[in-house]
Image 1 (cartoon, rainbow, N blue to C red):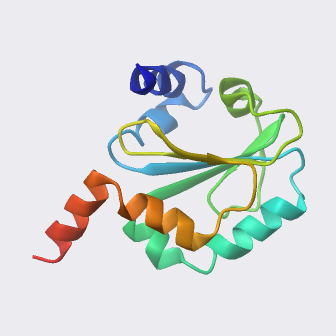
Image 2: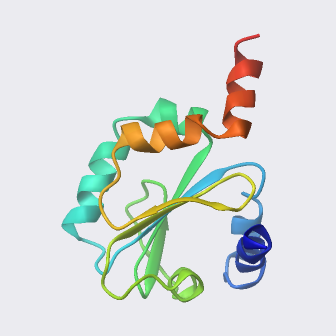
Length: 139
């Protein structure tokens, strides 16, 4: 049921729904909601993530950061106007929130503080599909 809900959100609520839908079964999506494009938590989170481009790529991670009125993809500095991510995921008001969406569209992790790269990679590497990816890459 949860997977269907996430798929429904991906496919119907985003103005750029095709972009989110295309991630299903191809990318893990890290959603970062914040009250302000210049929040300290967001800056800290990106400082952590920017140190690991190879690891993010290996794990097929796409990052969407969003506020109530804008969003950006990955490490792009340009925020685009849109309220769709915010209204689709309805984060708690003015709270920094991180959600990791798996390849299957399910929520794999959710927290309200900066996420360490170690925790992110440990959660992902413990997923059955990631274990299969690692096995295939080691053959």
